Image (cartoon, rainbow, N blue to C red; front, side, top):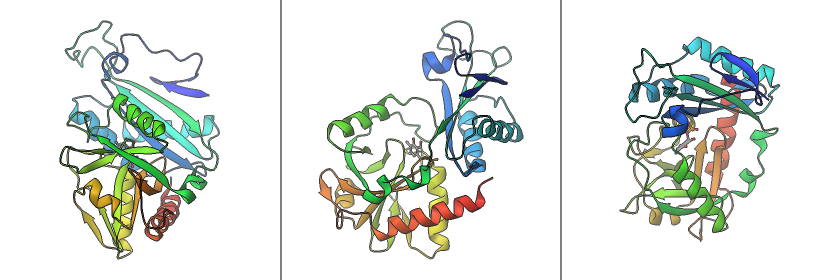
Amino acid sequence: RIVYVNGEYVSEEEAKISVFDRGFLMADAVYEVTSVLDGKLIDFDGHAARLARSLAELDMASPVSHEELLAIHREMVARNGIEDGLIYLQVTRGNPGDRDFVFPDPEKVRPGIVLFTQSKPGLADNPAAQVGMKVISIPDIRWGRRDIKTVQLLYPSMGKMMAKKAGCDDAWFVEEDGVVTEGTSNNAYIVKGSKIITRHLSEDILHGITRAAVLRIAKEAQMAVEERAFTVEEAKCADEAFVTSASAFVMPVVEIDGAMLGQGKPGPVAKRMREIYLEESRKAAI
Ligand code: PLP
């Protein structure tokens, strides 16, 4: 694989990052994952805009312009011959040459940028979408700025492991009052009748790029959408559930904490949203 490190395209074996890089030592870094279908980028502008916001919230300068970022993404797709897959991008505060809690002077230490690709042939035809996912709920003990897409992914990783041990596919984070925030790496939705319900935006969840697209598409299709908090108990009694993310698109959920939803199969709203989302985003891909 060819990876991108601070201005250079190099083989993954040659790529080097300092042991003093703050992304490595302090999780002082933000990231984005953009999917590629038919060699084209899905929702690039949304991911670029969220990256800019994450960086601004952490007082980090962007190492590249919007145009450069697009050019680098395209070059990575071309150099790695990606038809379907993912592009991972990380921006770190950089390498101050020592370990210190205090942010380095931005005049002296420039942010670092890394990209790599993951080839996933048939990404949009994931057979899991036909079966649907089983999720468990676990306490949301993450920090309070989940709207910033940082690389602090230890607890989400632990959540996926808890799900795996329970024989399930993923976990939904739940606050003390039983309210669902989001999935370990996706936004969470329930469907009641034909109404789609998903948590409102705040600092408590990541502002999903796929979420924004799906809600826009749902509204255009005259479907009822309610952005509000819902509890796990309400979710267990819902007609359907699903999650959205750049890598899974729209993925049906058929079981929550052992309670089967509907017929235990992906519901019509989730299936329809997946179809329309894939169709629309392929059309708009660049
Ligand atoms: N919520 C969390 C915690 C995530 O990690 C992700 C994606 O990585 C999402 C939601 C979905 O965001 P997007 O649709 O932009 O991929």
